[in-house]
Structure formats: structure tokens, C-alpha cells
Length: 113
Length: 113
Image (cartoon, rainbow over all chains, first blue to last red; front, side, top):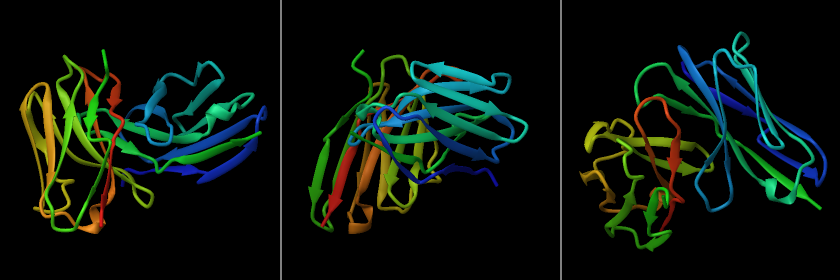
């Protein structure tokens, strides 16, 4: 069964600290993995996208890693800011078909001053 | 480009009433998706269109839900009659050719009382 699981479900950190969010998936055949940021009251916005051959990708203070062998991904946020408070959703794509996205339920991150 | 545009942003209606949600995809995108997001289940695909043709509506929960895409720049999701358990945030997303990125709208928050 194709599934995407994220942990933790929620996280509270102090401004300026780093954090790491986890994503495990069983989706196969795998095409790519994306991390989305969803601010409250907004739609998800893409942060990174990684294919099978990519191990890491950065977008500013966000760094995503992918281990296709263990089917795990992480999103590391460096020097967190209050504006990082949002839900972070891991999305895995199958190789074929347009209806090929599998969504995690997200990690709710709250950055406090 | 203004992105994917959804309206209304918020809708509060009484049980039994008809609700119509609207979406304008990004010009040139040939796929359009309707998703529903709840705290318990995260993002769930309801239906998607390719070149205005419904491809997969297996995610539509009941016959009370219907979606149309009369042209490449407009789609509607209708619920008739609405029920309290339909309360959720409904997102529209569009995607261009290939395995390109998905762009989400800001969503419509529906509350059925």
C-alpha cells in the first residue's frame, strides 16, 4: 500500500534553533519527493523537489535529504524564524499517471520568540 | 501570473443548501485537481481533469459532490445538499505538462452548520 508518514505530528522550537522533520514512504515505483510549506489559511507552496538520484537539495535555510534505499526523507530548517511557523507536507509521486501524488498528513511547526 | 485563483475564500452555509466552489487554474496548465483537507485526514484528492475532461473521480465521497470544467480556465465543485461533515478546506491545484510542479490555490474554507 502506498503511504507517506511524517513525524513528528507537531513541533515547537525557539526562534534561531534548528529542527529536522522526517518523512517515510512506501510509494512505489518512486518518481520524486517534494516538501511543501503551508501557511495558515493558504495553499501549500513547494519548497524542494528531489528525484531518485538526488540525495540533498537546499532552498535557503531549508535543506531536504533523500535516501531512496531506506525510503526516508528529512527537511532540515536552519536558524528558524517566526515566519517558519507552518505545516510542512511531504508528497511522494509515482512514476506514472497524473493522479500520482501521495500526501503525508504534515508536521505542524511553531516557532516561538 | 496570479496563480491558481479560488473563490470564495470562506463559505458558511446551512445544512441542506447547495454550495459551489470556483477555481481558475494557471493559464497553460492542462491538469486541474480538487482536494479536500481536514485535520484528521490531511489532503485528499477528490477529482482531477486533463484538458477539461474528468479523468478520475473516485475520490468524490458521495453523489452529493459534482465537479465540472466547462473550459480550460474555469472549474466548479458543487455540493448539493451540503452536510456538516463536508466542512473542510477545499483546494484547487493545477499542473502543466510533464512532471512539473503543482500550484495550489489559497483554498475555500467551507463551514456547514
